[in-house]
Structure formats: structure tokens, C-alpha cells
Length: 259
Image (cartoon, rainbow, N blue to C red; front, side, top):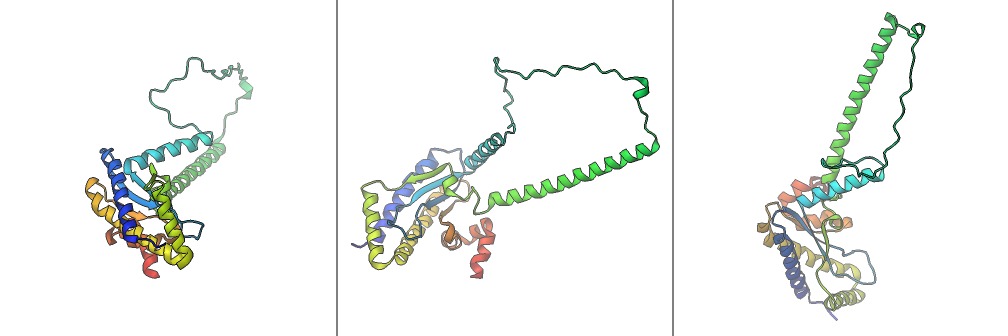
């Protein structure tokens, strides 16, 4: 049993285009920046699966990151920023206030520091200032690293499984099973690697077609690609334009050129 690769490409393209257009049209206030086909492993397994469709917008990414940050603060036991209109419940149990203790100072117990003591305190103040400056420098460096990480290919910005629209089935049974069985059978006769390579070539063609047909539906520069961490550099090179590759993944561009 063979695989009609042209028919498979058209089936995935038409279905992916329909689902993606529905999501984009249904959210006119969102700037969609990425579409990905994912969920197909290049490692040999019992069967070859149909891909999943994923989309994300600039607004959804920012909202999900804020939500994730608040959840991390709660997990660490830290207070997240509360809404401006937040009020304690009327039945909330407030902590018992600490009763003030009467403190009596005797005149003989008060010590007035001399000049040498004043100099010592001034030195300590300088040390505190130096520590604060160092803390500010470290915080600035950490913020810069976090910003770089948030834009890298391995960040949530480009990880389809982390997106707001992350797992849209492109093919339902029995059609999905028929295509999967056909590719799996072909792999058992002609080898896994040549079959999966041909399959990925089909997915790359679909990704390129989606970018061309959907770019006009969003104001953002639409990046469409096939996601796979083990072959990220080569797949991005095949799916993105040269301008997109240099703009969003300059480090991966250098890796590809160095091969």
C-alpha cells in the first residue's frame, strides 16, 4: 500500500487553512504572529501520526505569561499583585495585632555616640550603598537574560504546545487512521527514515502555503513552520523567509550556515 503524497498534502493544507482562518477571523482584535504544525516525531515508533495545528497571538502570549508569573508567585508563597478593587472578605480572620509594650528609658541608659562611632556608621552606610548598586546591576543583567530567553526559539513564544491554541486536530477518524496506517505500512517496507523525510517535506510545503495565504489576515509578520526540536535549524531554514530567519532566529541562522 503506497501513499499519495500530493493528496495528503492537499488534505492537510485545506484543513489547516480552514481551521486557522476560523480562529483568526474569530479574534479580530488579536495579532497572530505564528502558526505551527507539530506532534509528528522523527524518532522511529509503532505508527506515524497526523500533525496538530497550533496558533498564537501577541496578546495571548502576553496574557498567558502574566498568568504563569502570578501562579509561580503563589507557588513560592509570595503575594501576587492584587487588583485595585480587591477587598478582604468580611469574614476574613485577621492576625492578632501585637500589643504595644510600655518601654521606659532611664536617663543613665541612653548612650550618646562620640565622633569615632559616627565615622563607623558612615562607613556602614557606604557599604549598604555599594551593595544596593551591585544588586541593581545584577537585577539588570538578569532582566536582560530573561528578555533574551523569552524571545529564543526554545521559549514559550515559539513552543506550540505552550500556545493558547495548541492542539487542533486536522484529521479525524477514520481518515486519520487511514493516512497513518498508509505511512506506517510504507515505512515498514521502504524504511522509517526515507518515509518520515518525505512526510516532513509534505508538512513544510503546507507551512509555506499557509504563510502565503494567511499573511493578509493578520497585521503581524506571520511565521509558519514545522516544529521539531531535534531538527529545528533545518526546518526553520526550509519554512521561513530569509528575512524572518535573520530577524527572529539569528543564532540558528549561524548554526545552519556553519554546517
